[in-house]
Image (cartoon, rainbow, N blue to C red; front, side, top):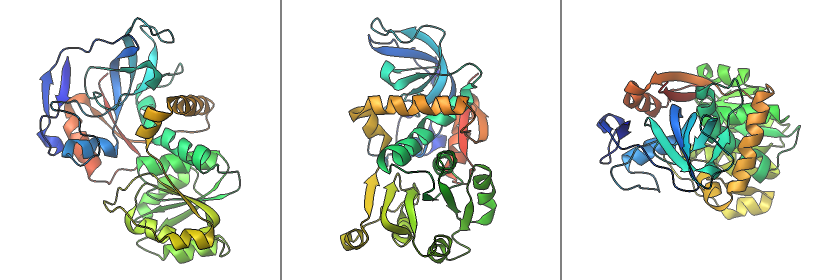
Length: 325
């Protein structure tokens, strides 16, 4: 099978196409004929050797895939050859075939395109586990979402609005925020063009927001501590800015704040059943028209390196997907 391979730490352009043997599923695994692959920040960091997980060389990057079941292990009962599925594989996605354990695979409903499935898995399940499971966000609460133009933030905007929150979306400039408004944001803040803290205080009658969803970290996380209200919940879901922030614990004490870290890989390892429930519900909501992933650009498989380079510029509005079909 054809695959894009990482043989050493480097940039996307250092990856090489090569032929590999097709994976053979173990007893509890599913082999998938890949049709679409969603790109995520950990994929890029892994290629560069800057991610906490460092697979042995050579490896095939990316793991958010959608396609068709090609074969099932002997103990797999819930899937059959020909089923259309979404899967979270970790790695191995940028290839004609991928495989993973059946507990990390979901049925796609009739009519859902593979590229939509590949845009739904990581970003929306992270948003669900953050907003629903960890923050226990309620309808009518005020939700501040950073990085609202990117795939992770935009998913939180869309899901938060669907769940009944009053969403305040932030991005570096006004041009990036139009899409967040389309996805359900009520208020827009271009944080390089205005005082974010003061704007949030005005929008909340000086009370602060109830929940912050932060995939950016760095200075935005620091400022968020001044934007969240009494008994507010701050969700840290990534550090796209490149700086891991530090917190003075007295601020949490005085304002009754809680900070939760959210790592999707942790749920895969420790609580796969919760992840199964999250994505199953998200797929159902999408099927009902409640949520709608936005795809910024689709690249053909032959341009997968260019897709990763494009994604690395952090100029995308929504999700970047590579299609093999």
